View 1 (cartoon, rainbow, N blue to C red):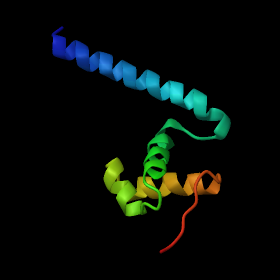
View 2: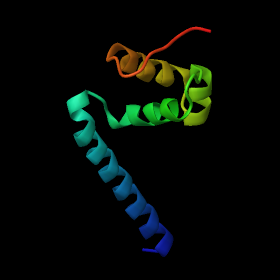
View 3: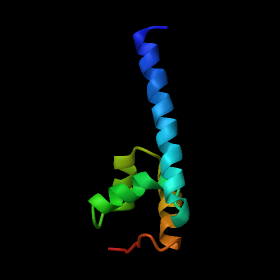
View 4: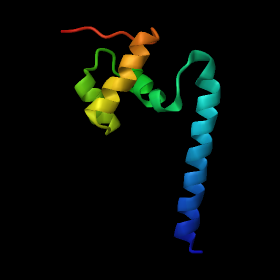
Amino acid sequence: MSDTSNFILNLSVLFRNTQKYFDKMLAPYDIGSGQLTFLLIINENEGITMQDVTRISEVDKGTTTKSIQRLIEQGVCKCSTR
């Protein structure tokens, strides 16, 4: 196996293990590792629009809406209109 293949394999394992760790640590708050990206973006950019969250996170609008709506329902963040 080439060095590049080993690196990619190791990176994949690291990513999966990191996701598992965050899932375990965030479980008491009923937050998954997938929502962590959105929380970090919102935390670092107070007053950010959902469109900008979508652009920064590089996911589709539906994913952003679903994830942020769940965070709002859980009371983790709030949404206001301009």
